[in-house]
Image 1 (tube, rainbow, N blue to C red):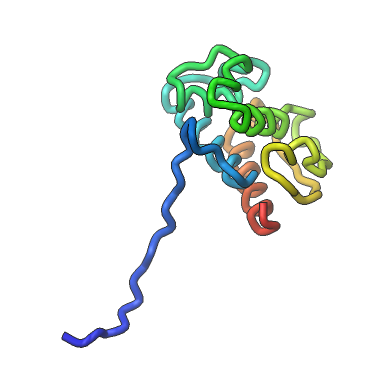
Image 2 (image 1 turned 180 degrees about the vertical axis):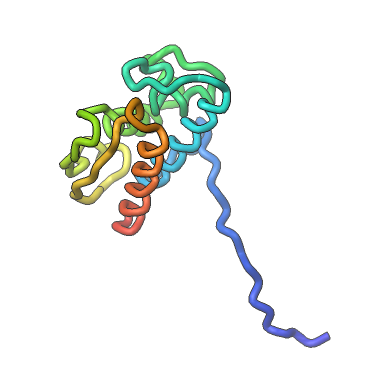
Length: 148
């Protein structure tokens, strides 16, 4: 049978982030964190940014370690992971429901290198978990388009 030039549908492989493989781009870290928060919710664990054991970074640590007692756990996986987790925590820090956050992501450069300046709106999780996650994923898309 001759080659028929069938266009095969290739799917992008989703990277697995473990203790030896932290995300290198901010957009990757955000998508990972949203997935981990959703997994935490399915286990009946309520997200709370003010309690580091169940915040955005805490959800990531819980997936990799099985438990998270607080921000002191962030260094368990090495200095690069600590930077990634700190960046995620700072990104999702509630500043006010629906308040627009103006940031140049300077605090995230240690974890992710050069990141763009942009303004974004991030609804506090306590106001609307669904909107919080949707806005996080939209931010990840914007960052990816900018190369981060």
